[in-house]
Length: 205
Image 1 (cartoon, helix red, strand yellow):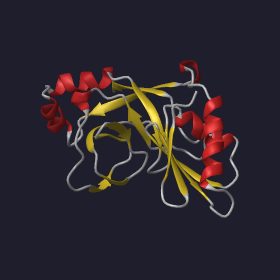
Image 2: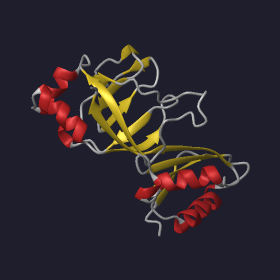
Image 3: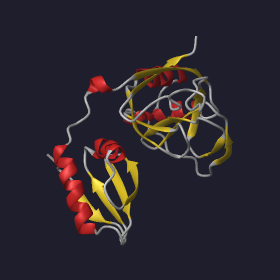
């Protein structure tokens, strides 16, 4: 099975649109294809950058199609579930609740009831793009990003939820904070989560 749409992007990249994009990334990481320099994930999309002196778009496209044909969707049992205690009360919480047409209490309850999934990792080490937000909780990004977003900030941006692993600039709307450590090089597994893992928020007691 593939159901994939593979199209060129410039003269050194292919864009793969497939429900198996996440599985393809894992496969390419474990078994790199010749000429592939980097694979950049998005939701159901994988952009594969390659060296045109080593392979061609046609050969690489054929290789990717063959890989996709052998892949199966990841099983739910392969994923971990992470429950993150959150202190709700970020600077945008009231605004987000009003935008959703909810009281702050109901907004927090809806946040905690959302079953989220790590779609992919990026932006900064440990940052996960969490998909699965109900439509009312999907918030427009700030018109002007903040220069400093504190580590542990729980935020909403477009269809995504996320947690900032460290202080960075950011344009998502902050609704809370967690003490969870998302990235630590001292741990055997530095990243808290992997693509496909399930995530829920709960009110910090």
